[in-house]
Image 1: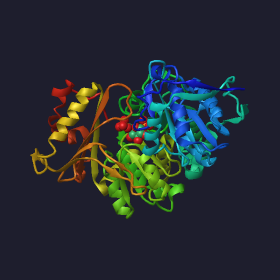
Image 2: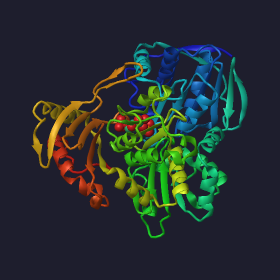
Image 3: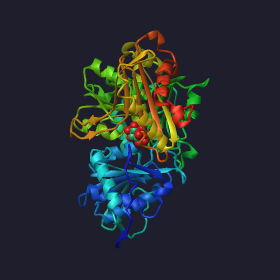
Image 4: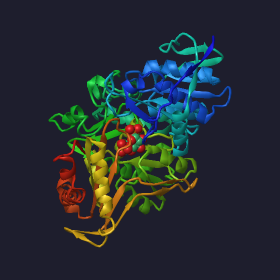
Length: 543
Ligand code: G16
């Protein structure tokens, strides 16, 4: 078999965003585009000769083709062994688990997460390092620089590998091992959670509905909930992964997971509902007629962690992304453990977890996880809730209400304005920034501005600095408005406005978040001049 060296023009648009390179499928299908990025990864990370890497994706359209290309390029770049998920599929947390378990050098994750799939949808790729987590910024920056300069890449001329059958195959001098995509992950979950207690919960007639959204978690959910925990077969829905996610938007929130939401708010609602996204790292938690915000879910898992076998000795610390509500900060204070505030992006948690400073991390963007892997983990979060419910035998709503009674409620909401022209989004950000000099001290309705800034983060472990991570308007009573542009979209700009107000008054805890945040939302709309600049009179998604 021969290794061919092929010319590439280099690409200027291969800058990884919040979580890897995400583009339209059609962009990835351009000649040399995928190869250019993959070679830039190999050149940057310098896989030691003979080392093992892991490869898998969420099964979206173009997954199979990309896997074959990457395998042949890995063989041409001196990789010793590649562990590939069966059919080319691994959920993002499962891939993180496999990298760690087999002490691989790293891995490539093929996914555009919650973005729609199919020929007209999105594709994505990112590199995860040895700890199983997304590469930090200094590596992604170097990959981007290399991608612009690259003039040739190496690829083995060989037939495609059979990905559907488990087994070991040779590709040039490299070994390809097609592994069970589910088993290692399900085994890890069984180590962390008390499966016997959850089994007993189901045996007592507890009903749940998990929506896999026709994405990667279907087979994982079937193995864990149905086979290992004995839940009735109808506890999972949309569990057959499809390359276009059935035409849907595999984002577990109140807008895109509406099928599940209708069931949980319907007459015959089960006690518990949950959903996960395209690649299985996000989660949404619902009770009967009740929505748990991701920020509250993190705080509640932290407060009840000792109910769970894997955390029964307590947690070292917690971390949250800056726009995530401060609910978990209150729990950390009560537990007397450290709480870290990082920029948006799971990659910022890696160093803290590696240093043993934090056990649980979470983000408002429906991501929660712990140091069992280095990615956020949708099914892990669902199992946390099931384990807590199995121990407490209370409803989801009762657990949340009791939490708010103890800690107060950090009322929270996020408004997304998707697909804005980039120029308008930039103009809006500029307009807000220009007001920073005179805002502090101003009274806006019932809120007085304490400070404003563009969030900047210094990693306490390696000293790296990340600037421009989001505009913050902080009020004297601890309420906040945060405004930032998403780093995961593939077209136009997505503006996110995050709102948080602390409500200690128990008699107001049952009120709707939109109602409680009405004034703060109006202040945000005035400050941003959103309607005047963008013409939009309502958000695309409210969570
Ligand atoms: C990614 C990142 C998360 C981030 C989210 C939203 O999630 O891993 O850390 O919070 O995007 O980012 P943004 O607000 O920039 O769109 P995923 O699930 O898309 O990989």
